[in-house]
Image (cartoon, rainbow, N blue to C red; front, side, top):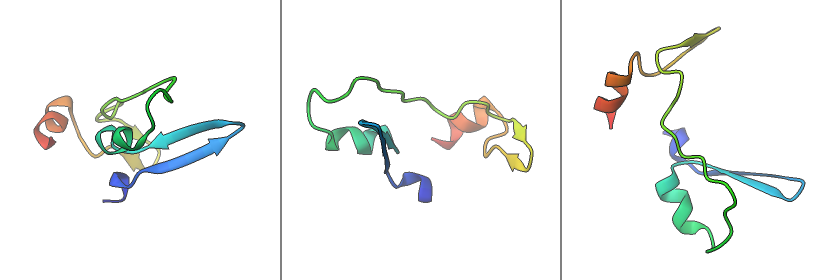
Length: 65
C-alpha cells in the first residue's frame, strides 16, 4: 500500500515525515523531534466531495488493525 511508504517534506528549515510512526521514528536521530503527531485516521465515516473514507465507523477501524 502506498500509504505505508514514508515521505519527507522540507521547507524553510522544517521537516515533516509522513508515514507509519513505528517505521519512521526509529530512523530519526535522537533529540531531533520538536513535535510528534501520531493519530489514527480522523473523520472516520465522512465523505468529502468525491473522497469516501476507507472506514465507515470507529469499530470498523478498530477491527482493521
